[in-house]
Amino acid sequence: MSNTATSTEHSFDSVLELLDQFHQRATYGAVAGVVDTSPRSLMTGRPRDQKHSWIVSRQNGQPTGYPSDQIHPEIGSRDRILRSPDELRSWVADPT
Image (tube, rainbow, N blue to C red; front, side, top):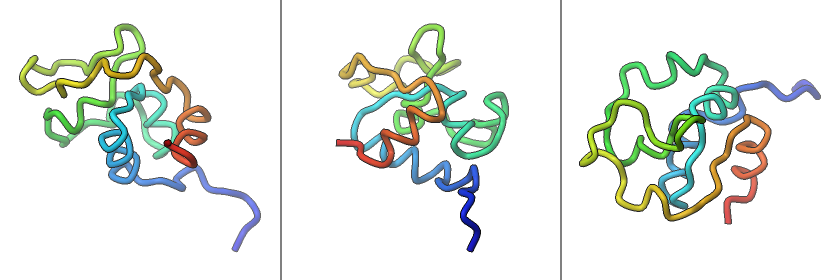
């Protein structure tokens, strides 16, 4: 095994599970950086539902293109938004 960590140490689904479990928002760019994809293609083929709504726009802290009934009702329960891949990686290591 290499001493160098790969950029895909976390899967999209594992990150999303933690975000949903802890009601934590993260930007498209932060999640894309952790799972090694582009922010524009991150949500391709994914449903627009409450679980996926924890991944949000850097500009307004809300998921892009979601009808209000598909945004988790607790979306604003935490002020903090994880905005960078490094910030998200640190949080995933200790989400409590």
